[in-house]
Amino acid sequence: MPHVLRGLRLDRRLFLKGAGACLALPFLDAMAPARGDSGRRPLRAVFVFAPNGVKTDDWFPHREGKSFALPHSLRPLEDRRGDVTVLSGLTLDGARPHGDGPGDHARAAGSFLTASHPRKTGGADIQAGVSVDQVLARRIGGETLLASLELGVDRGRRAGSCDSGYSCAYTNNISWKAPGTPVPKATRPKDVFKRLFGDPNAALDAAAKREMAARRRSLLDLVLEDANDLRRRLGGKDRAKLAEYMDAVRELEKKLQTDRDDVDLPEGAERVLQGGGGRRNRIRRMYDILALALQTDRVRVATFMLGNAGSNVTFPHLDISEGHHDLSHHGEDENKLAQLRRIDRFHVEEFKRFLDRLATIDDGEGSLLNQSAVLFGSGISDGDRHNHDELPILLAGRAGGLLHPGRHLRFPKNTPLANLYLTLLRGFGCGAETFADATGPLQGI
Image (tube, rainbow, N blue to C red):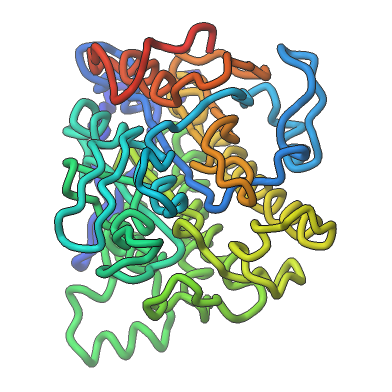
């Protein structure tokens, strides 16, 4: 028995509408005839940045290939190891001083996706390079609501010097549209949700807003009539997909409504999110919103900063009261190393949770994870040494067959991280001859 009612054909850009609200739909089987001339589902690219490096001996596997043991910090990925490649030996030469002295954290973020050496300045004459996500956005972002989506946890200062004479523009951003133009990130989950899926309050007057707040009405309530009409026209499999998707939206809305820490952070990189699990909640909300945005094809290219470069926040929910940046200057102190270990593992646990979510979403030709390339990494390896070689880089997903995960790949020392970006650009159809300091595409990924 067919899963789609005979004759029903849906455009993948179909929205549920009602009372000023507009909700994008996930991929449904009824959209299959409307995929475009190529008949293939779109690819997605996500880049996740973690500040301050990692505890390296708990990060890199000892053996190469498929039969490697996951070290402590990566152990949460055990049941997802077939979807992830651990990359060793990659280097950000642009993050090195090159005569500019201190400022490794700013350079680590400014060069993370540009692979270019940032100009040392605290003024308006900033210059880094064009980041790989923005090159991809020009190629694959034209058919979506947003060409790219930039997310973060910490707002930080918008001007002035944040790291040894380097502008805060470098420490606070990893996405660069032009060499002198960073793309600001969004840091409030509720605002990102409204931007992507519509604000249910937008079309209401003050009295109606108060009534809606009292009833805690959902975005879904406003599009319910349209949703019910569509549900009656769908086959059984698509009805189940629609119900699962709407349940996910409603659950996220409830969490956003009850989060007390979803407020704009004061300026200052050392601001601590209060409330114990506040930082964890914000990271999870951003990952959840990002998964929905990719699922509904609102965006295909995204970046996510888990913290600004040099972030010195604490992690009360991990029983860590000392700042992350301070801990990264561990000096081989066992107590500091133990706390860094917990922070690294926490970041990997949340990354794995995001991958699990992508793996459950049917994208028409397998899971959304199979249609994506998801990079996790830092522009610093060991925070105490401030080194920019042997970077901790994970690459998840299959990008529609471009990537072959499930291995630990070690490349020759000082292999440019830009080589990985060049590989992705070519695989995503950008036709790039080179990128930053790339010497050629990575082989065998």
